Length: 89
Image (cartoon, rainbow, N blue to C red; front, side, top):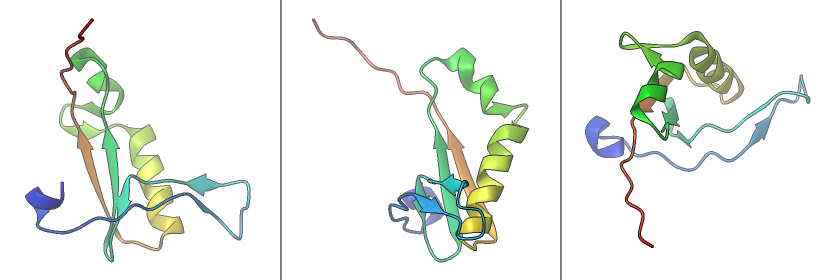
């Protein structure tokens, strides 16, 4: 994602809310302006759980919005792709 957007992301770690200590988030990356959320379903057919009709599904949108709130960011970046893996025995 860093190359496509021409921005760098760092590991974010896990952040717990001070106001709501039972709420925490761990985005896949962060920079000064964005949080990054990457979804990588094992099978192509499972992409519908993350993106449908080129739109982020509500549960992923809510996850990103909570990360943006706790990390005090106004923008989020999402990517969803499947990785083809070969098995060697």
